[in-house]
Image (tube, rainbow, N blue to C red):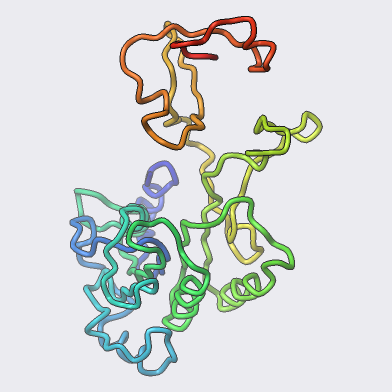
Length: 290
């Protein structure tokens, strides 16, 4: 991912994140992972600095000692806002994101900003299945008080909102911007705004074909919405028919009901657009209907 987003160009021009801190609001971090064991050049904070910040600010974590949250020059602060403890181990996503941001294990793996320090703000449950607004807001609040230079949020809800229903949330993110902090939010990986539509076909109207989804909070004006524009590879499942790859989205929730679970060879049948009339013309028992 690093060359894809220009990280190698930054390194070649001397930009390594030196003297900066990135708060990562995510699923946590494997603290002992080899990707984060290198020394940071010119770190912004040491353990004494973190202790002073905790004592002088009304942080959500209270007056927890710096010794409990400080791990190394790379990770001067780590806290689990979802579990209200100092164990930030959890779903792998946060470790993956942190690696892209600033892995610093030397020749093994190097992130975009290897000399940046991390504030690890775990806001998800251990399985990475969800995060609550109050935990995210608490982590944002502490990130500002601790003096983060950037906040990375590779999270969000599909079909993002910017209007009155989220007015209070929008105001909080605006205060982050006013504090001079770079708020970097994922645009999302979601399907389309017409999924499960009333027509039942998941397709947009011909008159309005632009149906892409951008998630909250990257839709807020305070955020820099981050998306990939040069990843030309896809990772979707497909059927191989001759030499042609036919990609598809499987609607079955259980793996045992999905086509990818099938073994052996199956005949496929052209079922047109999938209307009742199309199916009436063919036999699909024991076959794959296209």
